[in-house]
Amino acid sequence: MTQTNHRAVFLSNNANKNYLVQQLINGRADTLFGIINLQKVVLFSSISLNEFIEEEEKHEEWTVSKNYNRGIRCLSSGEQKKALLAYLLKQNPDFIILDNPFDNLDLTNQLTLLEEITELSSRISVIQFINRTRDLLPFIEKAVKVDDNNAIVTIENLHDYLKSTQSNNAKICKTSVPPPIKEYILESNELVSFKDVTVRYDERIIVRDVNWTIKKGDFWQLVGPNGSGKTTLLTLINGDNPKAYNQNLTLFGKRKGSGESVWEIKQKVGYLTPSMTDLFSTRHTVEEMIISGFLDSIGLYKHPSDRQVRLAEEWLDLIEMSHLKKAVFCSLSLGQQRLILVARAMVKHPPLLILDEAMSGLDDYNATIVTSLINKIAAESKTTILYVSHRIEEGLTPNKIFELTPSENGSTGTVKIVTNTQIH
Image 1 (cartoon, one colour):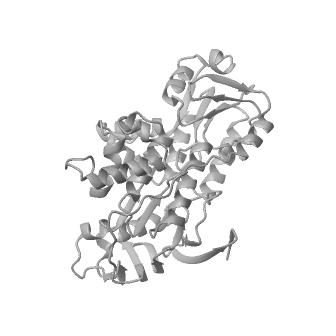
Image 2: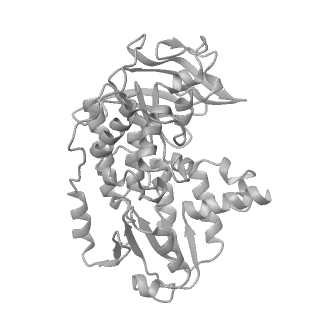
Image 3: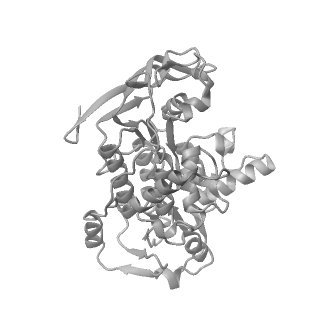
């Protein structure tokens, strides 16, 4: 029987994960983590997934997703991870590095993946890279943590360590939310109204008979499993989906297709998704990032007004990053980048703020900080918030939940009201 040797590696968002991965793959695990006899290692991570996607598109040959008869990019998050794991296990590794394996998966897919990992752990050693302590695999009993300086620290008592992270009361926002640069005049108290909206692609129905109204001052969370149609609803709201035409869909008081432009819709929406980080890979400063939110631009190509600069400084003060205003955005930690993107989306005080998987990839500390900022925006501004995630985030305070439930005939939606943290 194969002797396994499992470890958890708790990472802050400041840790150099790529460096640690390379050290493990190059046989340095004995000096880093106290693991011996490290031989063949495979990496289950978005890092390797993106590399396979690039290779497939470059050579037009499906390697990982051969059994699906389509490229990896075309698969859902659950399918991507299933295909990647199957491909890696065919390499007969001694160790597998699992880099935040449950990120972007709904509960069903998380449980399925957990069963697979638990089964393979009896014959393959597992090294779990982890940002959120709640994702710790149940069979792992030894762990280290990597601090902000990339120093490896052995965790002597895992139970006590987990307990200490649960008492994390990190907060931000010692100042008030800065005021809006202008007030939006809207024709209706209803920002978004779906009435019997059905979206299909060819013969496949994505969502069916959706009825959902988002009003001024609401704080919604949109939930649903992978592939249930969350992204479809978001693209209908922000004007990116041509399927919105010929639907009974009203945006900011105007029936879709009545003459408004996509840009008129986008001016009233602040948007954040983690993938936006890739759009800002050049040398934009933190200050330029915040100011660009007034203009909905990728980068800053117009001279900002004095008022825009002053409000950007107030937002930087709110998120406690005034000292970093001239720093290059892409050089900052993931947690710092996420706070900046929230501020950028909110700086113009849009009527609707959409936060799509805003906590994805964050460690426990930074997730608490971002949660604190979102709650403050909800409490101190007139902006309506739509938070999108598979998970109910501890500490987040939405008052309404719209849940998509998939079926063979398309996903349907249900409204749930949150009262005193109870959902009805």
